[in-house]
Amino acid sequence: MIRLSNVHKAFGNNHVLRGVDLHIPKGESMVIIGGSGTGKSVTLKAILGLVTPDVGTITVADKDISKGDRDALLSRFGMLFQGGALFDSLTVWQNVAFRLTQTGMDKARARDIAIEKLRRVGLKPDVADRFPAELSGGMQKRVGLARAIAANPEIIFFDEPTTGLDPIMAGVINDLIREIVVEMGATAMTITHDMSSVRAIADRVAMLHDGVIKWTGTVVEMDSTQDPHVDQFIHGRSTGPIEAVR
Image 1: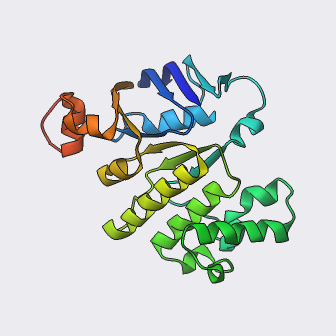
Image 2 (image 1 turned 90 degrees about the vertical axis):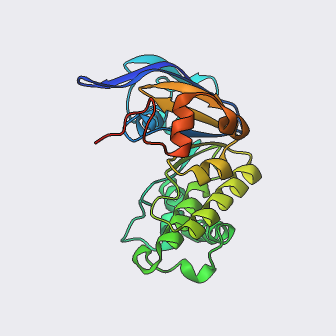
Image 3 (image 1 turned 30 degrees about the horizontal axis):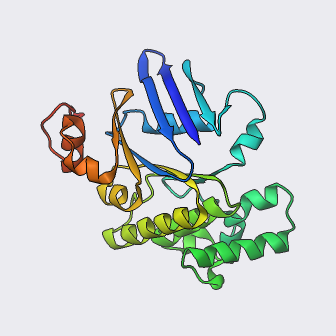
């Protein structure tokens, strides 16, 4: 479904991506791990066409994303943003149905779909007419997840889905993500530092370091790998090939 081949991206003298090769099959949940500033978010933005690679190609369903209708490309994606990114001035249901109403769907129909998706993430219909500021962090994250799946996308991106949540709510969100991805048969890509998310969500894991994919494998293979970058990261060791930013 998604393929990156020799993708490079620099911002001035800062070479963030230095030849990323990554293949995500249809229906697979891929989690990308790596330290801060290693290029995880830039990789995600490049797939969405928000930044243009200097070198290399990115294809979605075997189509080069640099060619063709960008709106048609983006219509295939859903996105759960790290900070929720809800519109403060819109009610919960209007946030969830934002894409639907922007593409011309009748508001009554869009509201019904929004309430259905809210139920899917464990929120009652009475939440629909509240504003984001009236919700807890965990509820806001669920609203963001409902919005990500509102249009039944083929591909869903999750950007640090458990950031700012307590361990119990993080577990709830991880379980919801896994259930929804499997239920929808969607292709998923997650970027995270949270190893509990990795273990709950991933079919496969990719380690991004120094602008390249250092390692890929299953969660079971991750736990037994001898790769020093992966071993240091998943165990949170201060010593190893990955230098801590001071």
